[in-house]
Amino acid sequence: MIDALKKTRKNFTATIIASIVIIISLSLIILQIVNITTIGSSATSNEVRNAAAKHSALSEYIVDQSEYEAHFITLASAVKEEEQQRLSTALMVTSIVLLVAGGIIAYIVAKLLMKPVEEAYASQERFIQDAAHELRNPLAAMSVTLQQVKTSKDVDEELLQTFRRQTRRLVAINEDLLFIEKSQKLDPQECNLSELIEEIIEELQPIASRKKIKLNLKTEADISKRMVSTDYVRMVKNIVENAIKYSPRSSIVYINQVKTKNTVHITVKDSGIGIPADELAHIGERFYRAKNVGTIEGTGLGFAIVAKIIRSYHGSFEISSKLGKGTTVTVNLPS
Image (cartoon, rainbow, N blue to C red; front, side):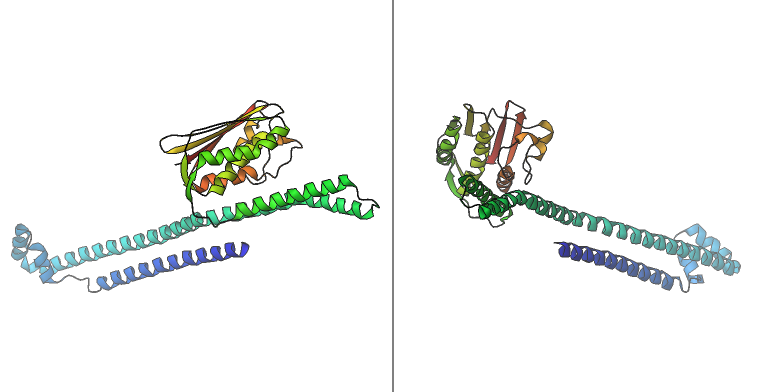
């Protein structure tokens, strides 16, 4: 990435220099043309008569004063020379303005074109740092667990459970990272979203039951949309799983899916811990987790995946939340 950034900067620098050189060359050519046209700037008697021919009174005056023809020629030559000097000055100023403007425009264009590259580099750098940070904890825990198992005569079941839990977390992080970084997209097919969301809720029912949480689903029949079915499943599943995870025992999670004229709306509402108002803008960033999640397990990648899927289908999402009262997530997908 760094090499690509340096190469791009070099290319832009070369473009700026080439633009300036071209502008300077054009300016020199223009000035050379002016110099050529300046040669022989002295007016002749024919030129004086031709210029005066457009004005009958002036023409008659020149004929009457023919003995002063040399004087008229001198005046005409002075006027012609002054006009050519003005033209030369104007062209020189124009060339300088073009030179400066060209340099400024080239710089601005290069800067604008470089901005997304720099942002992509900064994002990639943050991603690597966040990934390293998130992977460090489970790897350290696994290392400690393995050391304890190695030095222990009898294998402690609790240590094995810790090892399995950290292994599952690493696998989950790895799968989420692979999905986020995946650029290849499968061909969308016409999907019955009503059937899919019912299957998702049925699959998540055992997880909700362990906390005695009721999943209240309402969906219109036969809602369909062209999309990759696994994208839809992953998106809805992540949102509902979060609602279950952060909701108190014996509560209700409401899932509602409706279709308006051109949009499918999916709303998931819980009565969980909520999200601090100043942190709502960060939801969807990789590895970001609100400060109030405490010891609740998570990778911080779930909603980043949701956001990526929604963007890939040109949709939008809204999150409203109150601390201690719950969160509502609304997804809007063009149908």
